[in-house]
Image (tube, rainbow over all chains, first blue to last red; front, side, top):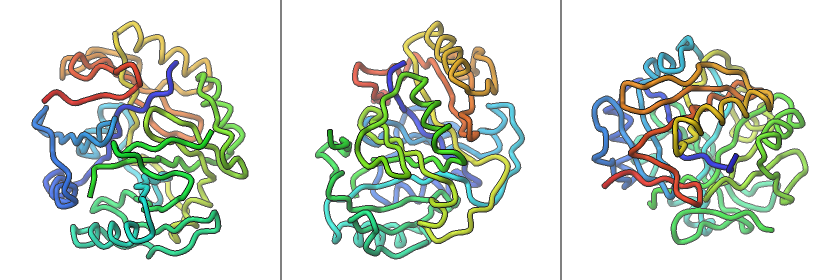
Length: 141
Length: 141
């Protein structure tokens, strides 16, 4: 079973608002399947925005839930300066600044924002895990 | 701001159990940074397993939360048969079968499992979104 994570769906309360946020980051919504869902090509995977209740319904589970959602996305950067710039850009686009960037115990520099639906994003400069030109990362051997 | 999702961290209750599950899928834990965290190279991104409370603490937010977590990962397959095989393999590795695969309204075939910490994975055959050799996917133009 190949290591494969091809698509990530974020459940959202308001699809229009969620799309507006990611577009405000400068990301382009795909023209594929635009009825009730939004797809963004993000490197080699697809970020999908889908109404939260519909996502739970598709899996056949109860949609209720609150508090910490137990996951974080990360945006690895090429520098401390890019980390600060991305956090600023996200907040300008409507994100909430959860934690300003600071030096991390593991030797990097990182902060957090949350998107309009509360999905947590870490923005991190890790000198061992710099983004490649295509936006992917490779763990050191 | 380049579309970039370089790392996904799943908060876990028991790191050893979580690692054992993903290893049982046939995935290889990286030798990079193994103290209190586990990394897996998954295509062009990194899947990180990290204690849930530590993840919340890193972001400076409260760790409490329950119910639906509002996201789903997806494993796109090349066929209906691969979809069934992956669901079976995941359950053998310790996953919970949330929904057996069935024909989907959007023309594909998909089911869901959850990992030992309840992270939801959709396993989906979508003829418009077949996995490439490197495990990535590309939305149709």
